[in-house]
Image (cartoon, rainbow, N blue to C red; front, side):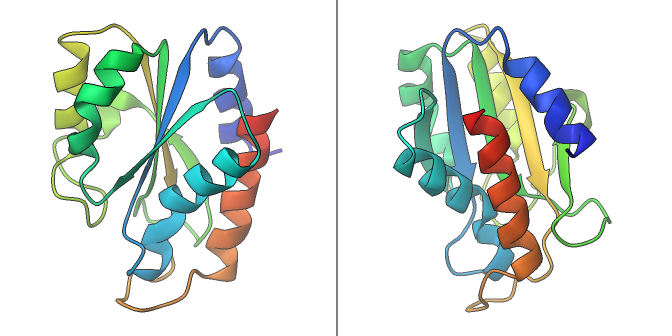
Length: 155
């Protein structure tokens, strides 16, 4: 199994209440990765609370605060210079103040805003895209990575 996903599973062992936010655009090829993870987990009736953040996950901060997660999992396509479909659990401190893909506000800004009011462990899962072109289909590499992330989260 991917070392990043082994680390993810270890992080979630003590999760009392996990919330997953799928981030991305349905219209931009592999940017849909986070939304696909959320959709597939929701269809499996997981104990993880699923929220679709689309291109503006910051709009979910009220709902996230209400849910008071012990672990907040954010899944997004992220360009970290790896082969398409590579999955990385990105340290919260590394996400910086920039946006990974097409959503409107940097994820760090949203997480910092939430951490000011509630305590949780942020877990950022990035999936390296192949193409973010408007109207493109999800690449086979990213589709396989989505399935790998879903399997790890369900276990």
